[in-house]
Length: 353
Length: 248
Image (cartoon, rainbow over all chains, first blue to last red; front, side, top):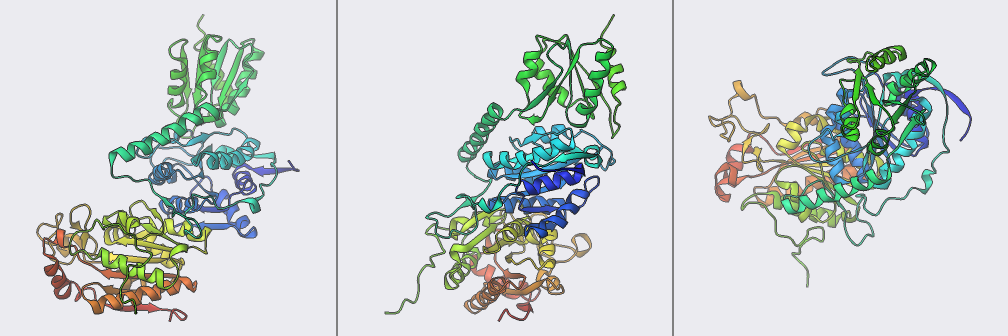
């Protein structure tokens, strides 16, 4: 760790990705995350790395796909409508088992929507999004410092499992300025072209073929089983979450990203009123921290899920709670963000007499 | 003893999956010969398309990728930008390149992306059963233009090399055909120059190959070759459309 810098989230993401070993960026402009590609466009050439503005998000993700097939740490960043356009590429990347990192600064939808902070792409990110049975690892930071830390981890996880890692943020986390301290630079001189990469056969005995394709159903089922085995390992080993004041909690809020940050204030407000409430904040949305929620179900009287959508993570919370306790919800839509007081008022409606 | 004929080392021993009279095999053969002759086989990555040649990696023995339909030029860009020392080809049909992939194709050309495309024009979507393509001729009957392609309904055939030749990014653009030995030799020379353009880092290169699709044209192989001569080549004339300095 080095000095503390005051940075916008959207730029801290880029700087952290660069220090974390991003060797190539491909992307297309879209609000509210344009500072991120702009930052890459300045910094990547300084370091002799690749920055290329693509002609569309469709092209951008396929450039990332090509770069990923050479074993190069590649990244794109976009926002909800652009991410929708990339879904086909995500599906191909998944079944080709190549690593890459994608940042989605979620904005209000559906359709053209708006550019305000939202979390309505939870389903799209965590359940696959494109066609076929696949997942990406999905991580959701809630501060600029955490954004900076998790960008390093995103590339490590992508390489470890040869998988796409999605970092879900929003315009609020992008525009916010906070002190941030970066982890040490990853030494990119130590990067080697992996054995599986398609860069030309060279001295290798066998050629490399990276495809997401098998016309024979028996073969394609085997490819799918490889994926499912990988996801099982990820669910076993990579779950991350934060518990905030849960030790003595009688009630649990569940929230991620921007809303989790607001909900921490809600916890403080409630505790001043003598309500023993805590927060469970999933950091990995896939794999989802279902065990900790399951465990806390025996401790708390109820769960209160709050999100910037109509109740998407809510479904995973309910699956984890599995009917043992009530799960209530408060969400804002279309880019509206609740205050800590609003969340508390909504929560209190479920306390009964 | 002089060897007059052998299978290029870049060509695998697998039988092709192509129909009798289809010219994909000839296109593969001349690419394989050139990779051998130019010593490029072991540094080559071919990005294969969606279409009949999706299995191309069975037959040309290099490192290989299969792009999503139309995305080969974008994927090849990702390979080339991160590994400039790799020799990167895309092999794409007319549906793949000129319809769904036209944005990626034109922008790769505009950027002068240092990759090479072999573009197969057989006037229809072969693998999906012979639907109308951007290159389908006026009046041509396909499964989705059962009354013949009509300009008022479907517009006009796209002339890809002529389009790209108006741009500054491409280093070498040509159209060849595979209907007779003379044209095959000419097409091979065009592709050699396209490879040289990439090898000399001059920018984007493309060779369109006017090809056959006897099965979907509902013709014998001989009839298909006759059709190329009589109907297709008058609309898609052969020749070099753009050559920058340094290609020769």
